[in-house]
Amino acid sequence: MKQTQRASFGSMLGIILATAGSAVGLGNIWRFPYMTGQNGGAAFILIYIACVIFLAIPCMVSEFIIGRRGQANAVRSYDKIAGGGPWKLIGLMGVLTGFLICSFYSVVSGWCLEYIYASAAGHLQGDPEYTKTFFNNFVSNPWIPAVWVVVFLLATHFIIVRGVEKGIEKASKFMMPVLFVLLLVIVVASCMLPGASKGISFLLKPDWQTVTSSVLLGALGQAFFSLSLGMGALVTYASYFNRRTNLTKSAGQIALIDTLVAILSGLMIFPAAFAVGVSPDSGPSLVFITLPNVFQEAFGAMPVVGYVIAILFYALLALAALTSIISLHEVCTSYLHEEFHISRSRGASIVTAVCIVLGIVCSLSLGAYEGIQLFGMSLFDFFDYITSQIFMPIGGFLTCILMGWFVPKRIVKAEFTNDGTLSAKLFGIYLFLVRYVCPVGILCIFLNQYGVL
Image (cartoon, rainbow, N blue to C red; front, top):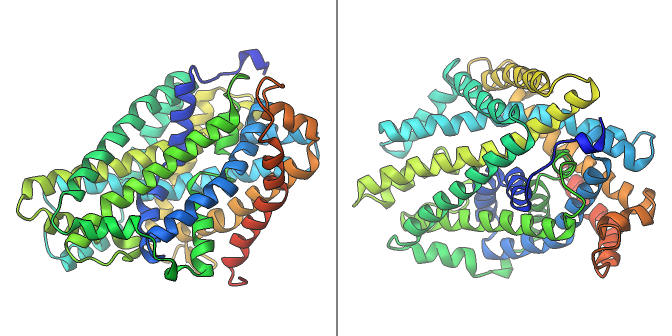
């Protein structure tokens, strides 16, 4: 396919919002708050921000360079910039990661849709034990979660088949502002609660005595995974960038939006949690088991407000999930479309169909058919494990090695500076970070997951 015929984003705003949408997801609104709670609050956030600056942004710029240089899907882009050889396997791993994450991510995304309905219908009003039972009964149901998986993936499919500018960009321009508005509304409501100041202090006043090596590595890992690094999404989106796009500036803006959403998510959850005496380290169950009771208790004097806040919160989660899953779907769709010379619509249909089947099986493996396992894990947990703890760190590590040591410096610098039209002052710092700091940081994350560090 000729470069002049290739689809592209229509505006700089579209580039920023679509790529930020890829990064902003359940990792920001679900994982970041409980990671912050488990690792001491404000100190974790400051370490996380440092990791974003010195690890995540250089990795993001590297993926942008590969995608824009290649002007193709992730596999072909890696092959082009490396000049052949086995490096395209990084892109193939990204495509496989996209299929697997789309599958299990759509399950959790479907839970968000169910909780929007349950909140609106008043099904989440009850004591903590009732809420826990409600969640367990829902997850173990053989068909309701599966229906939501199908609904969520069909919504994603509808956006993808419309193309890059009319589909992904247009949807991002609508969904990202709505996401911010919903987030700000809930933050304001949460911070106005009696006793909310303790939650705000927890997030903004660092306690350095809580910092351990595990906190450092936790922040490092959260920074890496929060920004969608190592899964081919940023490479694919960058292939739709034009030659005028300032890659470093764009990476900084996207990282800023992503971090802002994560911190606002903390301001949304912890003031309300502290107001009713809920522990900030409630863990992954915080969103689907703990928070329904938090909203109910926190706004007990104003039940209508609590009712509305709960609906808005799960709508926010669903929007964040959708912006992320669109980018992963696009990784797979663009690969099938370009490498197998089929229409975009047909490629998207294949991706959607495969992910629906795998998503339903993942859902069933959590409840109705717990015997569906691989290596002693449910299919859901296995897909999560192999992507987040194996494929993504390896992909990120090899990308840094490729860009830092194998791609000619003149090519990297030409892309970094838009063929010399932008300042090269930061290029030396970028190259140092990609060659030395980023690979070591990613390696530490990888080894820590296996108890080596």
